[in-house]
Image (cartoon, rainbow, N blue to C red; front, side, top):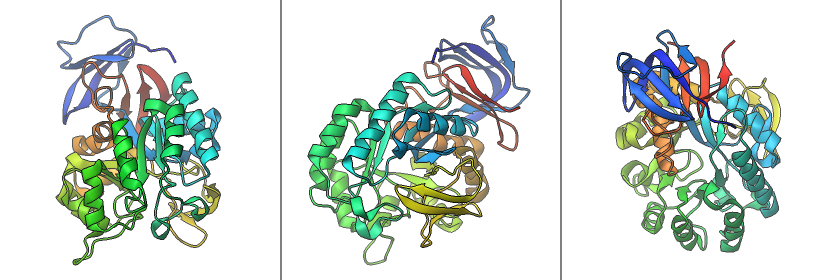
Length: 388
């Protein structure tokens, strides 16, 4: 996809981390100006007058399985393109397709597709890399992961994935209590991969040991993990109290009660919370019966559940997550946007390129009206979605 140039005028720029009236200029896909209208450079065409709308950094989702009928485990570029175009309708400009617990060959196929889509472009949100969620998880905290493929961490498997993906492997979620997990964590960190703890029944001490070995992120906090107990703080206790962990939050009011979300915000602060969707292929489609990792999923009343009743991802959009964070947690728009753009970019080592309206970063922009409905989405200076 070619990089384009444009000037966005008359906007309310959500910069790190405040709102101010101004102009944004993108040249050859890179932000070259973000500031007052009066001092903005002239002559960069086309000029887009957004008439007072919010201009935010593009939203970034580092934990998303599917959308628009596509799923990362389909293992095809076409599925990733479906996902990317769907996410762009809701202000998302970049994402990490997340795998599920599956056979090794299926994971390799998914990684191949991610690599091809990242190189080719999608016509929508950018594929930044891959999030390997499972198969190295706890059977007792598997959630909607297929138990038939849960297994201990394998250095050989990860090396094969790394040979295919290289630096596109951005995030791995595992259970640190699994045999051999600590050595795997150390290896992943040596490659520059962010290691998340999730789908884990680890004790507090096991989590803190994993942190010493390099684990530095918590997958969908509160969900799929040992909860907080006053004599055994568990994964949640470590997530809340250890400053070395960033923490994902599915802010849909279904996965986590608003009071628990408030506790997380009070403990971590907005700087350490990463909004994610954990969506599956039904996102953006009508409710009904779908599949996730070979398991049957019913989507009804805004929730995705296994036929046995357990939650199985979501149909949340990143724009809705931002809106919910403001309404349910009372955070300001700049803080909510930070949790949905800068924080995820920083978590996976991409903050030098993405996550804020800063000179020198990628020209990835979302434009929202006052109700935070998406008016336009821009990736690398190219409009990939515009509301009709």
